[in-house]
Image 1 (cartoon, rainbow, N blue to C red):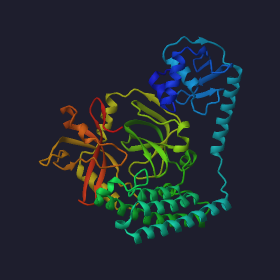
Image 2 (cartoon, rainbow, N blue to C red):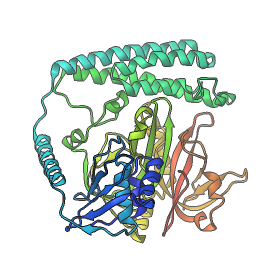
Image 3 (cartoon, rainbow, N blue to C red):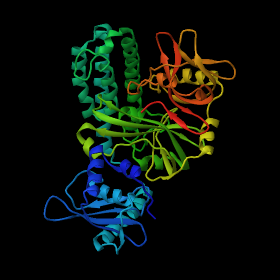
Image 4 (cartoon, rainbow, N blue to C red):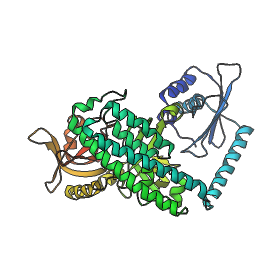
Length: 483
């Protein structure tokens, strides 16, 4: 049985315009017919268009968590406004008449099932490596790393203090060659450095008013670029020497270089958690100017292990109109096969299908039970992680605090049961908005015996570890502080 509401349909739309247009079709009574199958697995209907002919659309819920949408309209958006309108009509309780499934949809269903079976068969077959093509690609990547080393040396020779918008722009132009050398990850890392000195219009960045902060970030980026060149070269040379060697899953060096992991590769490598349940702790989307794309990031916790993981949806500028954005999720996601990317503290995860269920008090308590009670132990682990140049410099953890209060200097801090304190900060990922002020607006309930989801930030100038608050977990709610 199809069980959806309007908010669920909103989440399926590729953009706000599609939501408006889909709702508008129902509001203006554009649907000539509304039907559903007798087994309640498919919606189909006929919608009047701008021309003489009507459009025939359907939403097939044979896979409830991942329905298949079909329409004969020319739109490249997915789902199109007609399929969205069809689902809105159902969610709004419009009368749907039971009818036989049209033959063309039955045929498409059969073809889809055949493709899925073939896909499963192919997944079990060992993949043949085109050693000639692989060697050609790796040699191109090694040449790209030569360029990266040269550009990094140029940056060091110029000096951080002498780098300005003009020199950063010149380096950024040369960095485009890294993309041609199959090194989009290295290209993005280099562009992240150059953008410390420019704004979105290519002018001197306003952040340069705070030169110490910019210089500190630049030094860290240069260290990362040097490590990426060194470790990347070793990794690629090993693969060149042994073409049958699989991409490294013990670290995220492959992703740093730009390897796009396929779900089949992750499954083959055994990077799969079976029957996992996840709760989204917070969500944000941001504009990644370095890679010319929008990024939707969800921060989740696996209820069984307590591991905090990330989902990321990338929408390139050129295709943003046709790619559905991710959104906040307020239920529990039950995933049969959770694919986990190589990484450290907060790896990226993906899944093909999931079943939602309502979150309850046991889930909130499970999150709180996974929080760290001893701040000193977590701080020690984070400091150890920071020693690696390619490690995540801003890991996310759950901390159980006894009290949250202001210091004598007016700064917010949290304290554990042993009296260990950690100061809060609004510094973190650039794309995340300020959040400390929200803590001052929330009721006193959150100031005692709660769990803070936070991102660690290492201030190199003061040599202090602080945390940026992302969410507070109470016994009955997840209070999100970013968006």
